Length: 280
Image 1 (cartoon, rainbow, N blue to C red):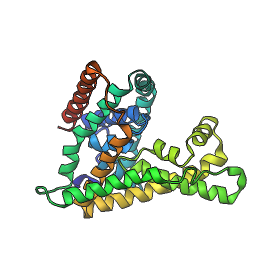
Image 2 (cartoon, helix red, strand yellow):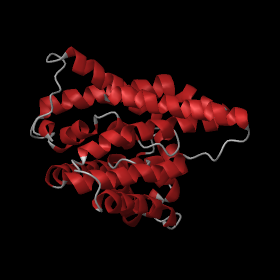
Image 3 (tube, one colour):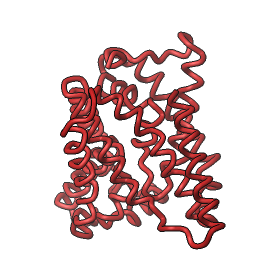
């Protein structure tokens, strides 16, 4: 991955690059609150994921470039959350199947690009085994014991340690495509408590959780960047499996009736066409 040494991030270098970073951040922010939709998956599909990983991993080496790039991306993501997320979630409430089929189409549209990143030459056993491994890992999350890392900060250091570990786990969900951090928090029995703590700025809960999230993000980004550089084919094929596994989470069931089938098929095609156009 040629861009991984030093992210080309400065807005003065390329105005078009700046606009694309903001736009892709906007798209990721607008969709990451949709249940089951991973922000990492959308970043991968929009072909900005590698640069995000590189910027986080090499932040201390290239502070200015990384800060500018991450700042632009986060600015776009925040704008997407504020402007689009609420209307999008409202649409999801009113028309759940067409909206989710749009996202399924979008994920499908990004699959060829991800497969090309694996630098595969033809179809081999690796083309099936590695994606199957990633798919199985995502599906295995459903078997996590409910409330595994739930903790009350009032219980002292042991509870803080659990929250720190939960932050590390959340970082993996945040960094790896195909794994929704909101879905993981639900599985761990921490979603309601975390939303409450964020809404009320309850620091005894947020500080250990945030510390684990920050450290875990840095460690995961560095490990993933090395894996992408040294073992691109298995890494990207496993990531492809993660993303395929996420489709199970967003699949809303089969439409009922010809009209519903037609609408869902149309949104599926629109999602596919939109991402194919962007990735080209």
